[in-house]
Length: 310
Image (cartoon, rainbow, N blue to C red; front, top):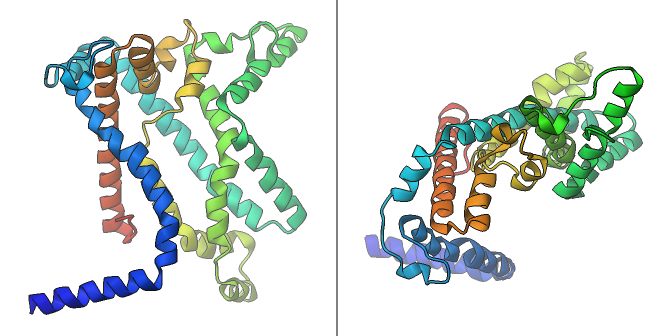
C-alpha cells in the first residue's frame, strides 16, 4: 500500500513538473541567486563561535563557544542598543503600518481618479530615493545653522533647535522620514488586494444605504484582512533590522546614546574594528530573535484567524 501511494505521488509530481516546466525554468535564476547569496554564506556563521585573526583563514580559528555572545551581553552598550533598536523599529512600524492601510483605502475610494493616480505616484516616488538623499533633505530642514526650520525660528525671535544633537528627537526624525519614504510603496500591496473586492457586494451595500465609511469598515477592511495579517507576519521576520544607513547618517556624538542600534554597532565592530567574529555573533543573536518573533506571530495568527505563511 505504501509503495503504491509513493508511486502515485511520484507520478503526480512528474506530471505537474512536465505540464509546468516553463514556470520552473523561470524560477531557476531566483533559486540560484538565493542559494548563492543567502544559503552558502550561512557556512560562515561559525566564526561567531571562533577566534578570528586579520589575514588568517577564519575557518581555522579556535572554537571559543559562546564567548562572543557573553561579551556582548556584558558590554555596557547591550541595554542601550536593545532599547534603541526595539524603540525605533516598533514605534516606526506602529505608525507607518496603519497609515499605509489608510492611504490605500483613501486612494481606492477616491472619486476623482486623476487625483488618486497623482497621489499614488506622489507618495510612491520617495521610495526611489536613497537614505543619503533622504537624510540630506532632512538636513536642509533641520540643520542647526542653515536649516529652514531654524531660520524661521530665528526670524520669529525663538531659539534654534539642535535636531541632530538631541536624543529625544532621534525617534521622531527617524519615524517621519520612514513614513514619508515608504508609506506609498507599501500601500501598493493593499491597493492590489482592494482591487479584488467583489464589486457586486459593494453595490448591494450602497443600495442598502451604506456610506463609504461603513463600506470600508464592513467590507473592504475584512476583505483585505488576510493580506494585512500576512504582511504583519512577514515584517516580524525583520522587525529589529532598523535601517542602518539612515540611522548612521543621523548619528552624531551628541545623540549616539539614542541612535546606536544593533546595525550601527555591528558595522562599527565588524567593518571599522575588524572584529568579525564578535560582529557575526551580535548579528546572529538579533536574527534569532527575529526568527522567534516570526514563528510566534505566525502561530498566533494561525490560531486566531486561520491566516499564516506556513
